[in-house]
Image (cartoon, rainbow, N blue to C red):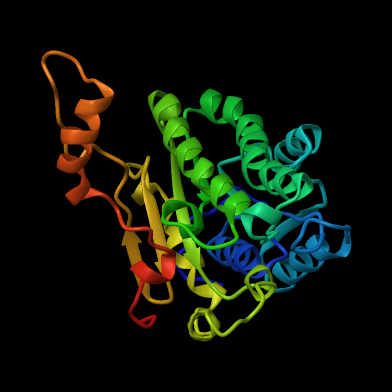
Length: 305
């Protein structure tokens, strides 16, 4: 157990907490004195099936290490389950202080072959599930005038990746959700931040290895999921109570602060634009500032540090 209890008696809910990133966050939070509700449906990385033992195993491991934890096997994609897991934390320990929206599913498929089911389940878990759990906790955070949301986004949305229209859209949505929660809840002392984690997890391992992505997958294998936890736990502490509305990235020993969309160039026509004017002047003027059609590996070109 950590010698300094930065989260002593705080109550932390971590969704998807039987996976590599979620379990690392749950364990480290408990190590710093938090009482942790370990949520996990126990389904596959594609969102299929359930295993009630997954969450219990992590909770038992935390307890065996001297921490305090309980298990929850609800689905974040079910608003009733989301409300129930927040209520379980309150019923068990009297309050809730932190929500880590880590649960997610992945169904990669090139866009023109993507089925409606592939879209629906990814949006339901990754985006709607983040909303459901956050919304359930919000009134309690408001009443106690404190609280911390940490949401898992992804460079698949912030930058882009092949065959991840569903995943990228949901994770970009999470970044927007986090920012707007930060704005709405700031008056109550509640903070909300998003993190894009780089780590080799069970979910990443489902991505087929091809000639095109072999080097990228090899880099991913060197990015251990436990590297994500320290920064996440730091955001839960009182020392970070002024940190809100930000998007961070964590890649091995690197921590990034991401930019957020802002205007970078403008043109105007005092007489009003015509289609011809747009083609002749607006687009040519703006074109030098266009973003390249980049993917996450095109931006993060150096090896993990």
